[in-house]
Length: 307
Image 1: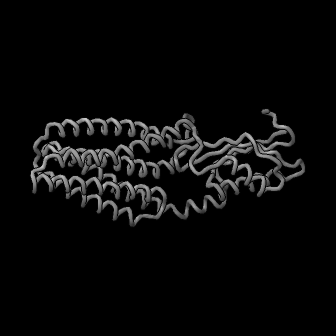
Image 2: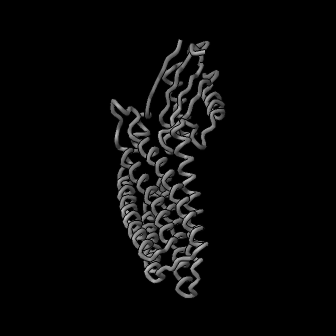
């Protein structure tokens, strides 16, 4: 005999924690939104400045800012989506939209990296002149913009979402610094190779970030097991912590987003055990030990009907 129980959240503890942190989530959402608008807005300035000054380093840094702006945008949107429930068409909600957008973003950025590398190679073969003063002014302004955005995020709640966004902005400071060095080098020495060489450095950093974004989004879209979750460890922990459970099998784990893991599993239990109590304890272990608050558990007496 099998009993299937599906509880998206355990009622008391989870709801209390959600209400307690609601105000902080709203504040974080506003700070992330402000940082996104600032970075995205200045990215446009860098594109225009890079084209006018003929600075490949500025254009490459604008690409890095695009990566950071989309990261901030996804973080901001994920906080908004966390308050939106599912419907008849999307029963799990709208969280996967950001994963799909992240996948498209990764492809776009890899194409941009390829263009930067080809253009840098062309300029190394035949150096092109650039306007160092406008490039220096725009790069310096970009450096300041990233510092302002980082300070905003530093004052937000210390959550994984905000920490990730802050690291993106901190990383973009390196791109702005490279653009400053390129402009200064051309202005002081006239050595035109500085621009394409430093553009290659930024392209390497951007390519690494783009590949990571693409790899993570593909893993989620292919229903891969989330990072940090070991199926064998889940089986062993559940049988050790809940004595009435003899065996855990048919364990599957995937994720809506990187922060929202889900699990389904079958558990073989004593026939005279209190199923409600066993279920609550299994779910408590999944949430407290593995951070999984959405699980579907099929409880069985005797042989599994699906084998």
